[in-house]
Length: 500
Image (cartoon, rainbow, N blue to C red; front, side, top):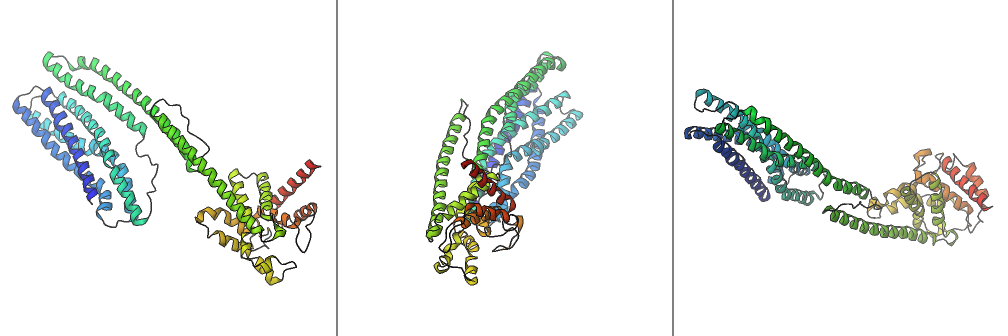
């Protein structure tokens, strides 16, 4: 609540300062120093301005309370809901833009409309004697003053909301252990800020001076308004054109490095650390690009080390498993090699091939839970013993589910669980059929079967490769996925032709 009060005081202080400068100083001095009127008329005009100022404050306070309500609710309640905090966070981001809305609508209209109505009444009664076109000039001047007030208020509000944004993030994390999800949202683009800022900075003083000069020149020299605006209008148009072009050029110059960085950040967000941002800037953005690229190099090094550590971890697990049975030493490594051959010829991406290889290395990890008397038995297994063996795919999945973080192992679970499923639905543990069997499970099933048939066992000698290939051919579409079995068979025969 204390932080909210500080924020509210800062917002109100910014508004009061801007309003006093815009209305009392700029507007008042513009009227009183430009219009040569008797003291009584000046007093009446000041009275009209003060009355309009009160109307403006009333209208704007109503809108302000509506805009601040979401933020206030999230601050004054001891335990706001998660949704309340997130809505307040988003509203804070919108607050600078909303400050412009308040000033250009309830602020500007609440001041200008009553003032014009009262001026028309006073001029009709003869209490104020001014040319009618002064009202149009006053309205144009008020619009320019409101625009500059909105410009100043936008940047002051953008600064004031930052401590509150930090507070909302901390509160959400403290109460619910979560972070704000609205990242990278653009509420006002850099291009739009530069365009309007340069336009107002360039045009505001000139238009305000031209409006005041027109009145003074007419009173002092009798110059007609048409004669005056024939050249003053041309100067203003040239200034407006220059401001627009300048704003476009400056916005484009600033926007380019931002887009450059954003493009590379998208790659980083997707886990791709291979690229770097192009550095062809001669200003401070060069330092920013250089720092970003330095960060990317650090991420590349960390990613390489992480990949090496992970590969070593998978290979070590596979080697530890194979070491239990000297007759199957290297089985997991060979199955991984065969699976990658199938995956490459099936058109899998590099990322998918890496996941396939690691899944194949771990495909028999569940055998750790099978007793040696069953796993290492020399002779034929009984039905009960084979039932124990059939548990190893599901057991492997269960073992990998214990690894933290859980999402790190998630991509490998389907292949580990399903590598003994049959294409005709007669496999285990789930009896899946056809393409209902996970992709990696169908590929590993072919690679696993080939290595099992060609490897020596205590109770039998491994069969020749050609015979194993023939069995794979016969089992296409029944035991194994016809596409992946055919890919492996074709790959084997092409390799054999090259050797011969």
